[in-house]
Image (cartoon, rainbow, N blue to C red; front, top):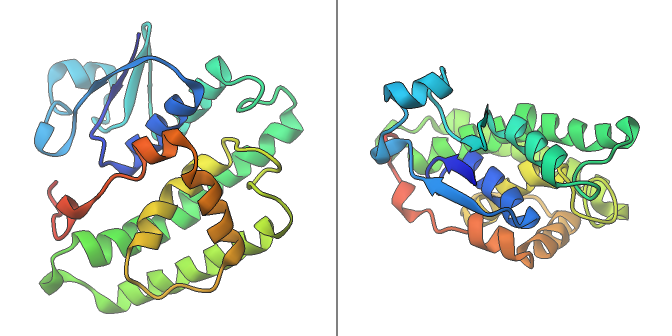
Length: 215
């Protein structure tokens, strides 16, 4: 059976669990990271030398790094909906995954969510937070343009393109921050919210993370 290590409130773990839910893969969950520990044990480090979550063991195949896990699961279990055999079409999802990892996620998750939610009020860098909020606005306006002629990032159906970027949406729209008018992104979010796997694995209350850098 597929085993997944990580805490369910972790953004990167949620990406993986969302895809697992979409693919209907039976799995065992091992809480790890934060107050659960586990990551610094010899057994964990023997499988994953950088000691971070998520990590999976699929019948002896160990994979770590969230987007690598997504690609592995899609290639193994997700044909044809999540793993197109045509390299040109598959690259469309790859591009959006990499863009989310290098642009949207640092601006929102690190700059905004960590900056103004997980950081205690007395330690917040307001200038840096406002800059990150501005970057998020630009990125979501870009997504709004892309989504003006399609229901999902890569076309007519949910693909790997939507998973990393879409995982940001629940926390982004729940936070009380300045947001641009992005009706196409909001419509995309509504479509994603109707997916059972998204509701189960991503739409998890995060009040316990407020002002906690060590969770």
